[in-house]
Amino acid sequence: MVTTPSLLVDRLPPWLAHVLRAQRGPVPWNAVLRGALAAAPLLVTVLAERPTAGVPAALGAMLAGINDRPGSRRASVTRLGVPALAGSAGLLLGTVIAAAAGGGRSLVVLPAVVGALGLLAGALSSTGPVASACGTQVLVAVVIGAGMPLPESGPVRALLFLAGAGWLLLLRLLLPSPGGLGNGPYRLDGEREAVAAVYEAVAGLLLAAGGPRARAGRAALSAALDHAQDALAGPRLRRRASSSAERRLHAQYAAAFPLAEAATALAWAGVSLPARIAEGPRGLAAAVRSGGSCGPLPAPARTDAGLRALDDALLRAAAVFDRPAGVAPGRHTGQSGASALRRAWSAAGLEYGLRVAVCCATSTVLAQWLHHEHWYWLPATTVFLVKPDLGPLVSRVVCRAVGTVAGAAVFGVLGVLVSGPAPLVATVALCGALLPVATRHFAVQTAVVTVLVLSLVLLGGEPPASWGRVVESLLACGTVLLVGHLPMPGRRGHGVRAALDTAVGAAHRYLGHVLDAPEDHALRGALRRDAYRSLARARTAIDLSAAELPPVSRHSAGSEGVAGALEQLIDTTTACAVQMDQRAAELSPAHAELLAAHLSELDRARAVPAG
Image (cartoon, rainbow, N blue to C red):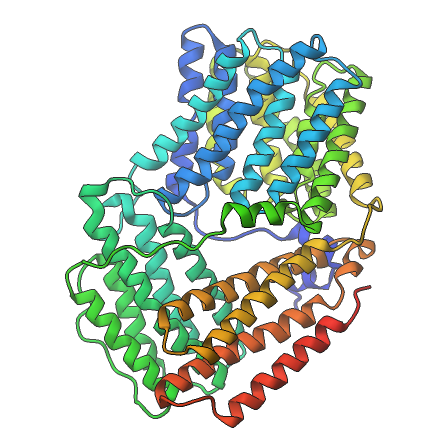
């Protein structure tokens, strides 16, 4: 018997198995091209014999490149632009702090300021991915602004940083994707692909019904709906030229909601369905990609409530696809500012913010005490390491150590083979091209970023320091590993508990609406999306906690049972909504008993104390 590598990984402890796992997928060639072209501002400054001016621009482009993930162009305005503004402000603030502290050296002022910023940025980072990216860029830019010796003034550095990130964002908005979709505006190719993926996920769930992959199919459908919702959010890029196409996409996305509901109900029933049943949703997916009408769609047999709901949803979707665009775009129901602030100052936000503050302050004190030439590397590295977005704590530390050593070794070899500014600019361009693929594994990303940063250090006029970079990174790893396992006020695991509480609240709101106002389909769809999205976030938090070392992971023990009971409740609520629609009647006694049983199971699971 031959054991595959994936089976070997599954047999390892969760905290070690996470180190060996990497994201998979096709190479995003458009992002690779943007990453290479992002070095253009640096090249311009080198040709103008002002290479130090290109360093902040290259840093802005690098950090924006890390945030340049697959998605729509409109979503990238927020995902890349807002963190870039935060980083630019952080760079300016760092230079001001350095001047106030006297040459950027202080064992009191700098650690206190960086620690306070870490508390604020860490708390806000818990509210969402864009806020997390903003917190990271602010902290990194502050320490770079305070410690990196560049001749440019603080305002000039901030503008150059913003220009580098803005250049990458401009490339993201203007460059067409290779193999653009259909005949519609290429500006909307990300949105069209996201909506088409929803219909493909509906087809996948229908084919998985009654089999072992039904649960994975439902999770994939939920993820596709989340991705499409995010892709359609954000500012319109051109109001007049693309308004009709945008309205059409919003209408097509809304038409997928009843299909997703019917498919979920059929999967919940646990009955296998014929392969022909997936042809309709796949035809709709093809129509989204081509920008044309869907044509005739095969209708399923109307033998039960789920199949009748699927047939009705296909008919309504076909009508939407074939009519002229005239539906106003739906609104993205994101969290409000007040809700974000409440989450930031919740127990989970403060727990994370406190750990970020202690890590940043400690690393800054250590760096200042060592009086190293590149002291800012230590706190900047700590900022990345302390972020749970990048994986469990031990996984982050191991990947950072391995990646830094590998990157320093590669740069050491390059330093022997080539010299001069031109090869360094070429190295920065190559690293920028590799970054979109390297972000799939933290160790690879670290290696690429290490080579890029060491190149910028030389272009900035500082002495080479490959092994100094290794030492600083290892010190940061030790600092974060120690602080990450220190006992803090209150209980650990606030993040998992907060995510589960949010998901439970969303599920109860969804269930209450189905029972009280089942005829309001628009609000029902929004509440169903919120319930499934909150459940997905809770599962992500649970998986992250489970891959920590046992002293940390035990604090979220039992949370998987809560998530499982919650998933059963939400799926059953969806099936009940479909049944009530088709029968035009109140909830049947059988479904009422199931809902009561799932509610009891959820209460029992939540009552189990964590380890």
